[in-house]
Image 1: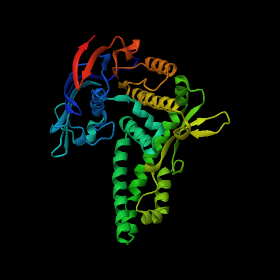
Image 2: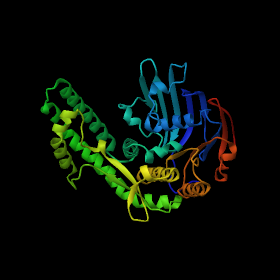
Image 3: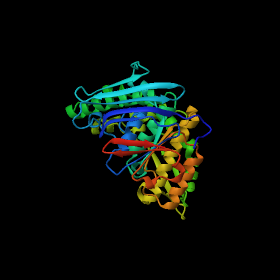
Image 4: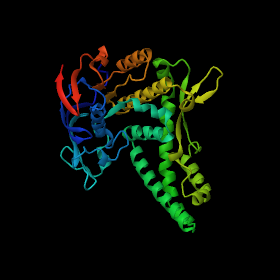
Length: 381
């Protein structure tokens, strides 16, 4: 399963009091590991702990205090990871102080965001269907996480944009609350929003343009006979001068924003639209018109593009985290997905499935572990 690129690797994992995992220690081989166990035993929680090393937050949007095991005061995740070289990372969160601490190679990074992407990884999970069927926020989050970890300058622009947006919205709410519209207290944040918002729109639209043909081909390879396409839809159209166009849009909508207490222009309102083109040539939103199988297939294609982006931009394949990836797919599509994953040159892989019989033969070489009530009961080759 090794590809032509060197792969990131999780060499050691030590998890304490995370979700229902009281204490789990693993040393996966360079090829990876299969973990099987009945539903509710902690398989997804284990993957979440690994993915936490990449994004420093819950993959399911939970608050850090809700990740602490019931009855415990804190959780801690420690790992040895191999990327360009071997690194040690430790992440802890204390419920009482609601404080998160991170260490990289024994040092506390200047900013928490400096530890993002410590273990490059891509997670495939049944919940990914929300990338297609869910609200635009889910697709913006997909783009933001991927580009923050792979595009130079994106994370900084995203952080500055969000900070300015929060302050502008606070000024708008205050104006709406007091009835005294203060245009200057709102307008002061618009140059920052225009500068960094333009950066976000440019990076997002460039990635979609680069990957749209590959996305369509992946969906076809998975088994979709009708063309499935993606496009970035933004309320800001300025050609090469996106920042100027965004500044003009913010000024134009300032009166509306003051009345409603909300910023109506900017990349925080954009969408990655996935559409299905029928025999009549009409493109219809897959979110509304797609079947469950079509939506699941498109979500898998997005995750495969995410993995390809990591590999091509970082020169290193990510760790593949597979949460029962063939659930809710028919046999034909499951076989096609498995074939695509094998041909993509997967690096280290951690696969979780409900039963040992669910493990595809292509993963027979991986070590196997059984999880029961949050505890790993054995690892065998």
